[in-house]
Length: 88
Figure 1: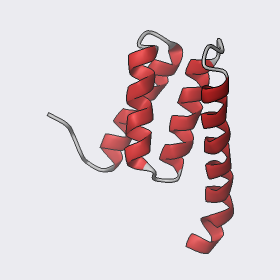
Figure 2: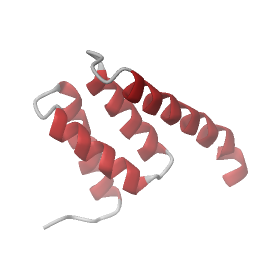
Figure 3: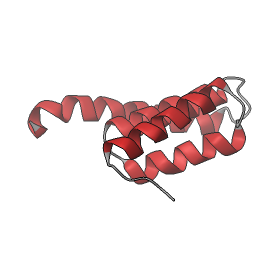
Figure 4: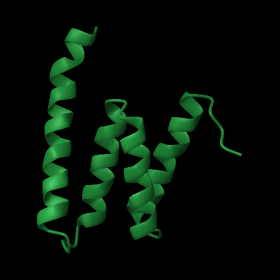
């Protein structure tokens, strides 16, 4: 199974590297919130959970009232539900 998933993981890692470059090189881009959200989604999809959590927290801090923040809260809820890990 791991061997079958390797191309998917590699593609997500490449996307994450691209998102990081975009965030660094275009810090004031109007779609910055969307880029952060897509990076969080990519991180979650390959089980990079600590980085996913940090990226989600960044998005919620920087864009708390955005559509991406709402989607991120849903991703966080899904994460906690999947792991039956409910923070107090």
